Each structure stands twice: as structure tokens, then as C-alpha cells.
Length: 70
Image 1 (cartoon, rainbow, N blue to C red):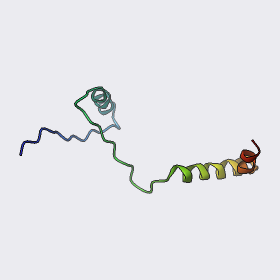
Image 2 (image 1 turned 45 degrees about the horizontal axis):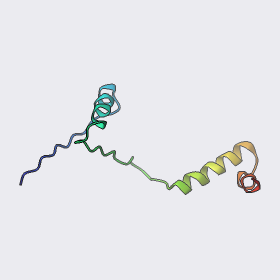
Image 3 (image 1 turned 90 degrees about the vertical axis):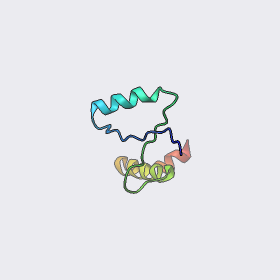
Image 4 (image 1 turned 135 degrees about the vertical axis):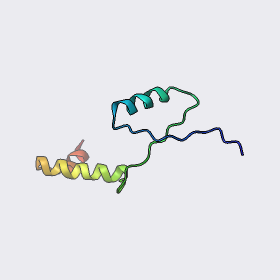
């Protein structure tokens, strides 16, 4: 079996790792994959609703009601 691929793990928490990724992003032969963060992933709707809750609490106004009046 002839497999012409290399898999590398690059630590992007350091400047040198981020530089390597920036250089590789512009290469046609390179396909970058970014792993999902560990823990619970939220849908866009869940994040939006939580944001409205926080804004409503912060400003003391029901943001959903304001949105419906627009």
C-alpha cells in the first residue's frame, strides 16, 4: 500500500507553531483539520438564546420583547 501522506500535530499555543500553520494554509497540497474543543459543544441557537438571557439580565430588559418590536 502506497500512502503519500504525513500527519503532524502542531502546537499552536506557541508562536513558532502558529507561524508553521500560517505557512501551510497557503499550500494547495495541505489540508488542515482543527480538532473540536473538548467538552460540550453548543448549537448556534443555544448560544444565541444564552446571549439574550445574559443581555436581558444585564440591562434589566427583556431582549426578546425588544427584538419583536423592531
